[in-house]
Length: 143
Image (cartoon, rainbow, N blue to C red; front, side):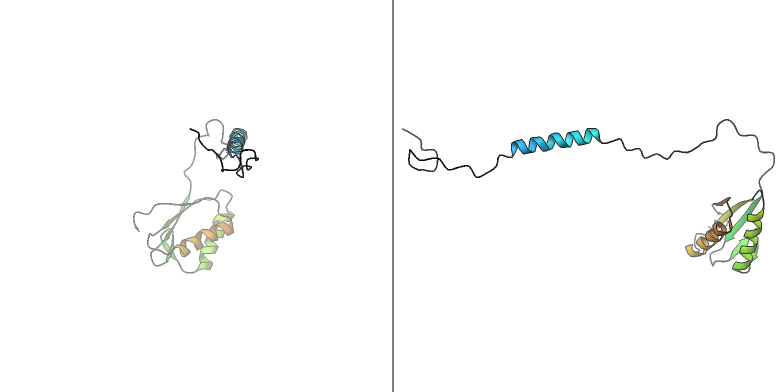
């Protein structure tokens, strides 16, 4: 009662060499390297450092001057309720705002149906001419 284990070669012959590589030690080494890499990677910080003002600001003595630019659904531009006829007239008004030492706030109120290129053109003009206090404002009248 015996069991024949092997390839069935003669008893005195050398056994055939194993042709497959033992993967267990290689996997163990790779896992250790991955763990070491995870431990040594610096923590990612997704914050933006800002220099915030310190202390309480002085109370505002005067109300800021506000210029409202409305952009109607058909691309008509209104400056404080008055229609601006051309791009050069808009640029002249924005040049006057940019030249002031204390610039007024420019509130841009586009209609929700207007093409974006008209609104982008107004914002690009303001940026190019140096208007620094500009912001988009919700527009209940034109929506």
